[in-house]
Image 1 (tube, rainbow, N blue to C red):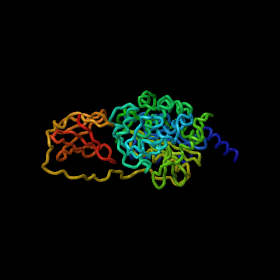
Image 2: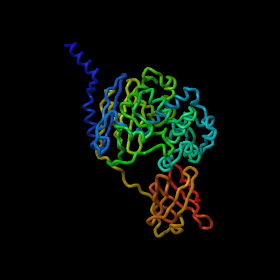
Image 3: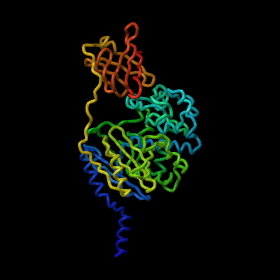
Length: 465
């Protein structure tokens, strides 16, 4: 009888039998997907060098209703930051870059708004969010730039914190670090990710461009609030090293295994062990329970050491977790904008650890109350006719934007975004970003437009051409 039991167990293991907890996990995910109206989800778990599960739930899109599989491509968003840390480490291993040498020694023209940061900032600073810059993310969605030009324009974006003072998440610093790695390798960030990670790890379906994803035979489409939306194309805005990787559960499990194996994959050392240690070395304090290492957040999951990162971009969310002591890794991705990717990954991690599984259903989800702003002064009007505010305005980071009169209001036209300006009072106009203001010169001519494009700093000043 004991022999028969062992034989059944062995055959099940060889055939990839589902873990005992999978049915319970499946039911929880199905319930949460229905509750949160998530079209599709993919989830994978690896432990002790074996794939425990790799599975799709739901559909790739709401029109074709094709099923999600372990080979379905999803946008990974900021999970990409770990890939940028990996290629930076690879270039460092080649002797072409150093973690703690100032970036200006490699890019003499590089500048930050803060001259101290210009002199001292290193690639380690950039990859651990301690540059002093707040997000300044509006430029990533509004303005078409080459990557080099975007990096050159970082100097015109104001910080709100002292350099190296606090952790402050910033995508543009990852763009800069990825660009730098490409320059020092005589390549591009995209080619480095392909040649130094995708190919040696065996991630044959992964890519760094949504234009490649939509040519594949199995890809998910992005969704917002239950409706299909447009793909975000990183490269047209000069970005990519902060979030452009698209991947599958099958490929991501190979990637997580490479990190668990201290940089080894397919019998080869993809990254030297000492560089893996540098990538996982915490630098910035995120909060009382977590620190940030280059491209990864280091903390605990249910009392066990974890190394993780989430990702979010238009219509997609993703989350990955490494549990080094348990030799396990989890990845989840969805084609929607709910928090279910992170919840599903953490639920799977609970089961791997054998702890009481959390409840990932969310009953009564809803927004908070309406945010109250200042009340307008009644009976006021702009100093000029609306047509006199129209024209071309310039900011050194954003370049030229055009203000036009339309339908009784004003519009500010960026390359990819139009901000509607509605008169509030005097020469102030409300926008979706906050309160805009026009300034007149001593002769009464409209000379400046102040736009609140980053909440953490004062409004950006656009000068009228």
